[in-house]
Length: 346
Image (cartoon, rainbow, N blue to C red; front, side, top):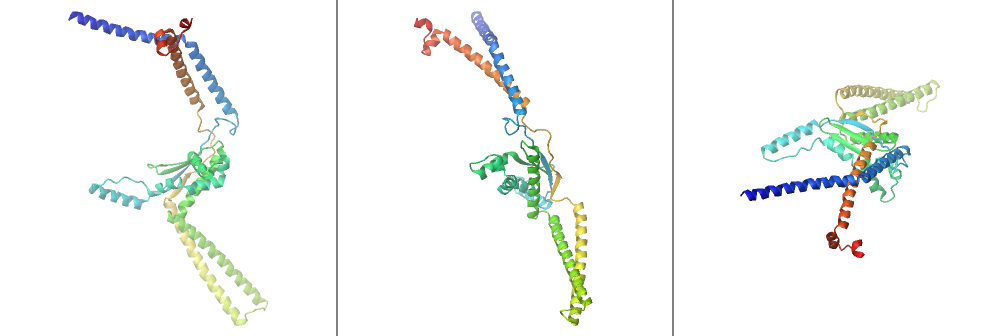
């Protein structure tokens, strides 16, 4: 029993010695190739720094890694309380029935997310700013431009705050700001066209009716002035009785139009008060500004990544060279690989 225990302890000590020797061998390899590791890592650092400086000094159209800017616009989308309550009731009933119903979120926010990726939206931006030519796309211009635009024109929605954000990334900060402004206006007009904000629709209709009524009043007043001038001159193509009838008709229509105008103005002012007290469906919280700070690339992180990559590659090269030297110095390994040493050739 004692002999067996001694043998086991001896074997354990041998394994520990082997582990210590192998660790020392690794350190020895690194020390042997330390100059190569330092040289490769140093060259990588210098190359990364030089590349970063050159990319920073060159103009954006010639730089391999130009600065990019990302202006943002923030909109508040009003939740549809009616549909939210209905969906909540349906979810409760489904829960009682043992059916699981996933939350779909606000229908208006879902619509905004859909519109931000629709072909109509992307094509409108492309048509306005001619991005196909800007991105130098020749093959499949429509589809390729849409794909490129989806990567730079990004929309996000925050469920907690109900804030919808549109951002665009480009090397020209002014151009990027203009694209975001156009995208915001397009989205707002699309919401209006779909009739989601009844107050805005009613306001537009009232403004159109007020303008039409005002023009009609001016027209009738002008007709009354012309008719009065013709009577004063003693010239009338209708005759005496006809002039009186025509004058009465104009005055009647003018009075009616003035009453309509007053009613429309009253409704318009009441609607403005109502809109001030209510939150619109699509409200622009913040327009995009011209960014003075780049959003990417991070040249410092790039230099760090290149440095670490070069260090690990040089360490791998050191172990690979050491392994090759061991193979060259090991006859058995040479035989296995069918290699002939110089001693055997002589």
